Length: 345
Image (cartoon, rainbow, N blue to C red; front, side, top):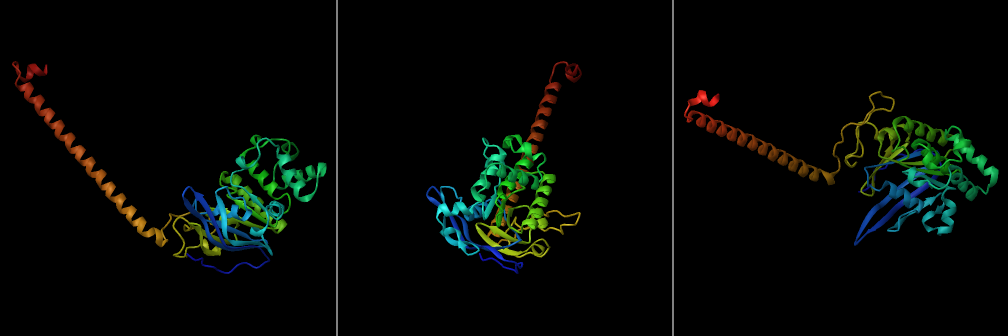
């Protein structure tokens, strides 16, 4: 299934992904988690990767960072950071790239942050590793980062552990650690999924502000089209490990949609400034699912009909049983020696 490509924004190309393929070994079977994904990311651009759960968005990000699980491996394609092929680098050289040139905000900060290290130690570790700054200077840099991401009373927060922070503060700590070495590319994997609406808006405003100030490129992975409508410049729709459509945000968030876009990926949505902006009911547009959807709908209708018929049979049986019981009782009353009046008394 090829991708439909539209015009891209101007700017310097920072990251280029060409035909990326990732496989996962699941027992005797092989799962093609990422199957020929290609896109490019430019300086100062926010590129959104959207799709339903399980379509391969997070696995694409982990493949770019070369942080796949033990059962996963990259089997093809190229990932070029400017002129450097990341897939061809040895692991020692790749460690110098992670965090320094490409950083990632992971999906769940509660499990990504080390629970036995303080917030300050986890941020200064990145600074010491990539910027060769140690001691009080590294601590001052960590404090500046906490203040930049909007954490109040940063001096006290540096000595606290992740479990002492709320979900929004933990997410801000993850952002601060990712920005510690001024990366060229920031990968945000569901950075606002577990947050309430108010904190989500604050995190999105923070990402926009930091992107403007630092000029970095952002790869935003999400399935929330409200987030996409607010921050993304271009959008790629992913389905079953493939990118099926790429285009500008304005085209993806209007009524016109491609028939190649899979079901549950692009609901009808309104302009971001519209007070009535909301997702509308999903409509099937993937030819792979149409027949299956029709079959499932027919099965559902037949099941509903059977349930209705069974309910009708139960009601009729109950009515017949109640009628027979009443007739038997009346016959017993009439056959009593004293007659109906004495039996009823």
